[in-house]
Image (cartoon, rainbow, N blue to C red; front, top):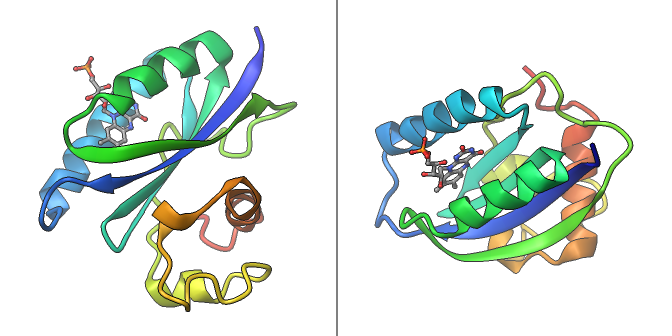
Length: 142
Ligand SMILES: Cc1cc2nc3c(=O)[nH]c(=O)nc-3n(C[C@H](O)[C@H](O)[C@H](O)COP(=O)(O)O)c2cc1C
């Protein structure tokens, strides 16, 4: 088995994604991911998603292709896909650390990226790594 992570961003297609809508995505994700040993986190802020999927390469690739087609979001953009030595979010079938705009603006190493009005949709690989590291370190772990 080749352990890998796949990280992408996307934008919601709903005018305003409701708490129920988000809960439905999380519940479906957790049920499915438990069955195929996928772990990770989903962030949602200012209408944009940032998701980390970890697991066996073939499983993660297939899951990404399914998620990519989901009509609940658009402009799904893969930022990172590479082998990893160990999982960063092994305890979460799909964690949902609640982040505010202010939280994002305080992440070290992003150089006011979010303060300048950028969203997850504006990330590229380098900044995605910084964001990932901030969450790995556990500030938002619950
Ligand atoms: C932002 C977003 C994140 C998602 N994350 C996952 C996920 O981690 N795991 C998963 O199985 N489905 C996820 N989904 C749902 C899939 O796109 C798809 O609807 C689901 O896997 C289909 O499940 P089913 O085959 O059991 O009906 C996500 C959908 C969205 C919009």
